[in-house]
Image (tube, rainbow, N blue to C red; front, side, top):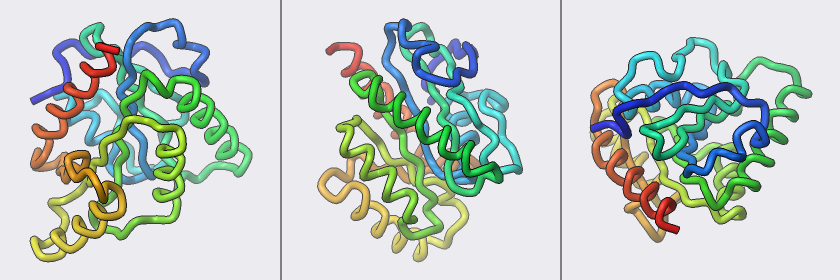
Length: 200
């Protein structure tokens, strides 16, 4: 199951002003560098190279925009955390993302990626608090579930689920981009949420 049939790259934008006039909902992907964001985007889009997969964390440095069936925009945000860039560039990234999320809040469904192999990370929790402050619609995608034993995975998912979705586990989706596990339910929920934004 994929999010759309015709997915085309529009542009890489340095700020929201570059695409504010496109009257469509935004499906936004955010997560730490190296959390598997590009792989997940490629998987749900059914394309191998839609989002570039890189061995170098922090490769995405602009807001990368894709048109999905003329129904909504897919927006790939820069990863945060490990990118080997200057402090000034990191500050600029944060300003760019903050401004975009604030100004486009009512159009956004944000898919927030967390790594199932790790307990909640400080930077993840900071961004998650910010998502709540802005009142954004969100889903949690817990990635790389194929990397753990069943017992360890169950323990880790319980911790992550209770941290990020304590009152609504229906917003939590364990997924593997490699095996495809969990992708169908995540795509289905994404499309339902996008429809609700379109109907507002």
